[in-house]
Length: 431
Image (cartoon, rainbow, N blue to C red):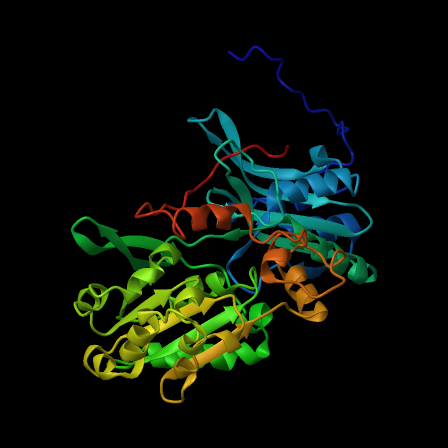
């Protein structure tokens, strides 16, 4: 027997503000709300009709892509703290979880009064998400309670207010991380026995709009690169350069997921000098029809005429990209650097050898505002052109995020770890 006193029901409901309280409705009409085949149990539209005696307008709050997820707990807190809504008056539906000994929330219906109701359905717990808005997780494992659907029912005179409310939810979103979108790079390593390749997994970053991240002119450059890289028995070189933090490495992470049926060989910055080694070309000859990715290549592609000790690396790159070796091995090269284009060897820029050349730079103020707003960071802090790193770090001017620094220190990303997307149900109603 339960220790607590059983609740009693009186003719007059103790809380008349409760959304499900319909004291003036005849019993015959109330039974119509029993929808045995409806997992939500009651009809939100019927409740609205009964409360306000008018058919509601409906606003569906949906993301234009599947990567953005509404964090239900943040929305609950917003309703409570900013709109002064009493969450205890909500209609809720849940499932008791005997493993955690708590109720798992499935759906809620909130009546804000004055002709506005908010419904959240199919609430579930998800792990491993991107959290650009720095929202508080719902458990110690960084899980977030997500509302699959959010509907706002309202009277026509509230259209502007409801649209502003829906816009405010952008700051209450997390973004998915798809572990299935993983490509493998073969990183060049060296020991006492010579060179060898070690596989590392690279997750695809969330870039839904290349033009928004890099400018409209970059889209055609990207298409040119992909078209060439996805052709068999091709050769040539791609040069990507620009200021630190402008998104070169971020783009490469995206690019490698677009390449099909080719081995991707990654030369980390500390190994770039090895390209001039006599043993390096014979090692590469084992991997025909592949793509060589060289980061921070400025020290090996400088103009040979301007150097007192010309590097053999430039000659090797020229031979691979458009020489006899290139004809035999069909290897393509992607090199990034931060120095000015005028300082590199002009032979690398010759027509027929050069696939594409692009300078990454800061986004203009308007583009920075659009991207920042789309990411949910707001636009108030943007008053000058910004790099991608600055935008992703809320305009604080950091060169790169802590996560990206960690990846760089571990040679872009952890070796062969991978991760699984946790998706389950659980969590409390509100914090």
